[in-house]
Image (cartoon, rainbow, N blue to C red; front, side):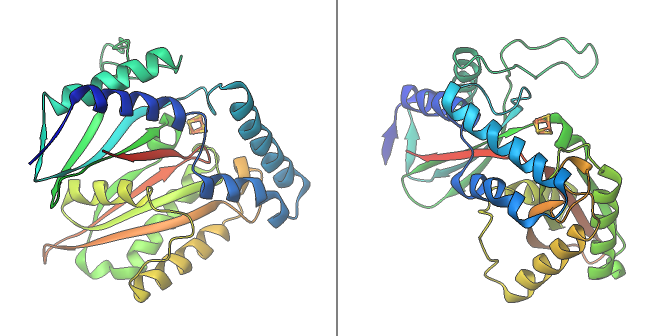
Length: 278
Ligand code: SF4
């Protein structure tokens, strides 16, 4: 049994919240920096130029990439041989509190009815998985409201199949237009139950842009659907163009014989996520 100190968890989460809101993952950054070269229209090229400039400014000034620094979402894998010398959930929330406070990041968490801000961007949304081993892996995502609002879960008829999935995803992206600040990243969860499909979809957004699905059938489906999305000509910031989406990733799990759960989680071009292993 290995013991991990709460203070180390708080510091790691604090640092991740601040760093991820200033520096995007290298794979995301590369796609956004090079995106203009893949566009024909001056408007689309200009949007990519501005996104690239914004990335540079965030790096240079330490200001966040976007004013919407998101709700704090965490995927935590805790090894079954790990002992935390305190309350793990409280430690993650304290790290979030410190990161958003000391990093001068906007606090976006509020009561759903009164709309009163909680003041420190907590509580964080935390998903836990117990895994073998003696490590603690914490993945963080800053999830902005514009893109999250365009996400949906639906329960398709079992016979809807792949055509039904494609139809729902394409309709969702088409209806979203410029609202999620494209070019977007699309996470799709298929199967499980209502809530599990949503978790699968959000987890898919953590995958690297250049990651190829190890299942050849799913890899082909991801490529097919990404190409169809990019034929919608919504383009960067909805001004038309080849790249409505940069990446589309699917996670699939067995489901009930009477169900076909489907979740589409949309992430904006300001895709910000990071992970740490303690
Ligand atoms: S959707 Fe993303 S890029 Fe647009 S305002 Fe929200 S966080 Fe910023």
